[in-house]
Length: 184
Ligand code: SF4
Image (cartoon, rainbow, N blue to C red; front, side):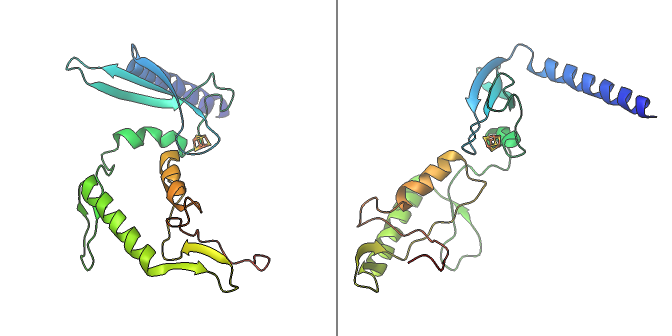
């Protein structure tokens, strides 16, 4: 029974290998790095130029020659291809107006203007120059930024730049840090 099971598994693995080989046969091999975390696992992306001139992404997988990950990827990194090809990918900024029930797609010009206006309004409304002990702080206390493990490195960078205090005392915002008894 065990031997039969192993035989079936081996045949299945072999057929999968053959199928993948056919799918990426003749493809251009490009080396990259997983965008998700600081482990920096290496990736291989396979692309093919179609007859109409477009470049099709066929497959992304772990780079077996990498000393970092030796071909392996964690479940998150293994989804890297979906960043590029998922039909559920959101491709434009989404905006929900005050009181609106749904989101709508808007232009980058609209959303960048909106962010700038709201940051300025929040900053003006919540800027404090000193804390409760009289220390000079010059900070905005009314802006927060929510991130998560689904962020790519680029999104993490975007979150970090405007919110790492102090970029400049006038524009820096305060990170939310959980209260801790040792934290003064
Ligand atoms: S594959 Fe996983 S562990 Fe490796 S860099 Fe990407 S997210 Fe990090």
